[in-house]
Image 1 (cartoon, rainbow, N blue to C red):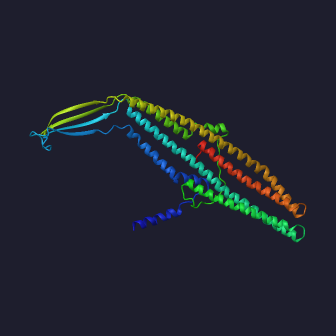
Image 2 (image 1 turned 180 degrees about the vertical axis):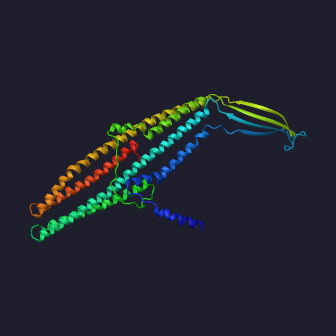
Image 3 (image 1 turned 60 degrees about the horizontal axis):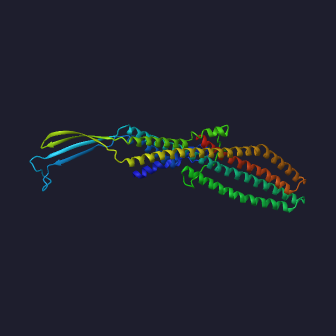
Length: 409
C-alpha cells in the first residue's frame, strides 16, 4: 500500500516534468540539473573537501593493558596473591608544521577537483549548445527543402499548362519531377541527420537516446563577448582546466615541503599506571622519539615529490597551450562562418531572389527555357540552404569560443 501511494504521488511529478528542447535555456538548465556526470563530479568534490580535516588531524591514540607476574603453568593466574596490571595511553604528535602542510595539500587537491567540475560543466554546456544548434539546423534545412519542393511543384504545374498550350516541351514537367525526387532523397538524409542530432543532444543531457525532445521555438542565440582573438585568448590563463593543474602543482609543491619536514622526527607522549591488587601502586610518563634511520627511503620520497611537482607544472603549460589552440580554432571557425552567413544573407540571397523572380516571369511568357528557370530556383533556394548551414557553423564556433571565455549561462 505504501509503495502504491508513493507511485501515485510520483506520477503527477513525472507527468508535469518539462521536456527540454524548445529553447537553448531549457537545454542549459537540464544539463546543470540532471547530467549524471556533473552530479558525480559534484559528489567527488564534496568527498575531496571531506578529506581536508582528516589530513591534518592527530593520529588516533593507542591504549594498552598488560599483565605481569603470570604463572607459566597457569597463565590465567598470577604467581602471588595479587595481580599486577599496567595501563598505558600513547599519542603521537607530528611536529614542525606537518599537520598544517598535509591539510594545505588536501585543500589544494580539493580545489583542483572542484575546478575539474567547472571545466566539465563548461565542456558539457558547450557540447549541449553545439548539439542543440545541429538539432535546430536539421529542422531549418528540412523546411528549406520543403519550400523548394513546393516551388518545384508549382513550376511543374506551370510547365504542364504551357505544354497543354503547345508552348513548352513535356520534358520540362518531367525534369521538375526528377528534381523533386532528388530533393526527396536529400530530405531523407536531413531527417537522418536530425535523428542523429537528437540522439547526441539526449546523450549530453544524460537522457535515453530515444527520449522525446520539444521542437525548437526559435533560432538559438550564442553571444561572443570578446572583440578579438587576443581578447578571447586572454581568458585562457584563467580557464578552470589551467587553474586546476596549477592547484595540483601547488599541492605537489606543498608535498615537497612536507617530505622535507619528514626528516625531523615526531614524538609520542604516553601516560601509564600500574595496578597492584585493588590500588594504583605507581604512575609513569613516557616520551618516545622517532629515529630517522631510513634516510635512503626519505630521499626517494623527496625525489618523488619534486618530480611530481615538475610534472604538474609541465601539465599546466600543456593544458594552457591546448586551451589556446582550441580557442584560436574556434575563433577562426566562428568568424569565417559569420562572414559567410552575412555575405549570403545580405548579398547572395537578394541577388538569387531577383534572378528567380526574373526567370519565372520570363518563362511564363516564353522568353527563357525551363533549364534557366530551374537553375535560378536552385541558386535561390540553394543560397537559402547555404545560409542555414553557415548559421549552424557560426553557432558551433560560438559555442566553442564561449567555452574558452567562460560564458556558461
